[in-house]
Image (cartoon, rainbow, N blue to C red; front, side):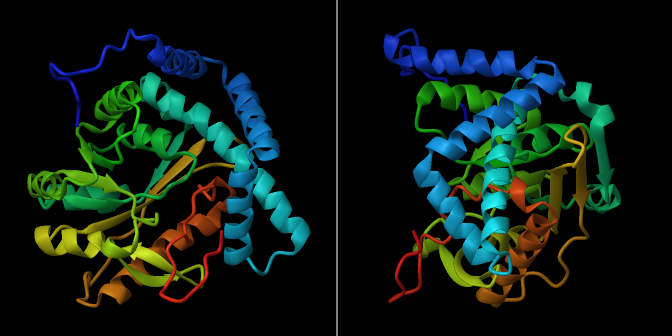
Length: 305
């Protein structure tokens, strides 16, 4: 939701100057030549890999838990590739927010469009299951070339960056809905809209059940099944990634989840997790392993981080 009102802070104040610089840098980054954009993104990722020790520790822990079959060298390589991919993701986010996605249409392959087209043609709306890949915001921009959608998002703590981010996402998606606004989500779906949200993060014990994710019991949000019960809309898994050539992208709708929800909260959460896990395994380095996916543990279990 936009925060344009009479009580808006004075964004000309010096405390907002660093944010203005960051926004300006994103506009510049969005217009860089493609090869230079990749080079800068890789550089950002490598610098973060060397200096962001806390985030590197989180990433190492996540990958050790989720890919125990990899040896030490393979895991270290995947950690480094993850930081590089997420560095490039910063440049992709800038491109998605600051430029018309039409200029990238020739770089996109979109599979499974018939699944979403059928849902929208029936007027039922859809709950789109996205994943926190490094390509998340660019993926949303590319998706807008083919289908309209709204998006559920977490407001940013900085009011200036929140305004910039929300306006950018509203341009891409139509309506940016605060993640706490369940009524808004339901209302948009019942109006026949597709609403994109990503249920792959740890939102705490109160709104979650524990279900397996890469074989680890993970706090898994119950909201997917709840929204589906309230709207009767199909749940549409969406996969998107940067291809190995680093120049093209693939988006793919999988068939909607059948017989969902089942009435079993743990089984429903496990099913959603399995879909997300399958998407991640295709390009694991592009996932946001930098966040603490397993921070909430079952009672009596020690923390991982």
